[in-house]
Length: 161
Image (cartoon, rainbow, N blue to C red; front, top):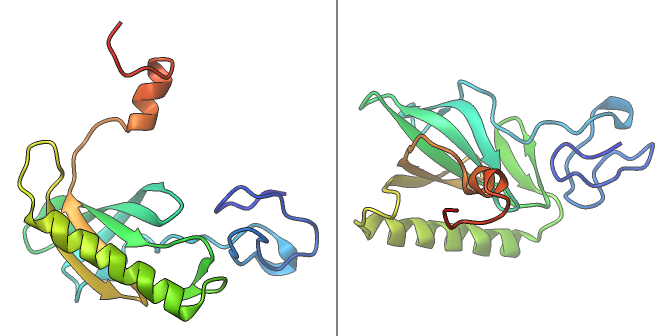
């Protein structure tokens, strides 16, 4: 069996993934979903989580709605490996509290810096905040294909041809 979060091979009887620490279902079954439940409200109800757009080693990106301005947004949640979810709250299980706190502060610093940028080649950051034991960055949502998808379609090349 493989972990649904990181893909690591899991031996029978395990209660958590040995690589990322994701909780496994009853009896060592599939990993519990690390994503927020769809419809979750964030920032005192200002944003609603609509669907998962992608996940990587340090976070999960959701399509969301800015309820106040009635516009789609991308919501990036800091969710590094070595963490799991208890309800909507993120719990570092294989990271020390100080390491996770440092990661969270770097994430918020990055959000603060990106929010100051105004360039057509850089997605706009609208908001950032702490909630559920982690940090979030709310960005302009741009429809389109991911870089991974474009590379796959072009045989690993970016140039036209």
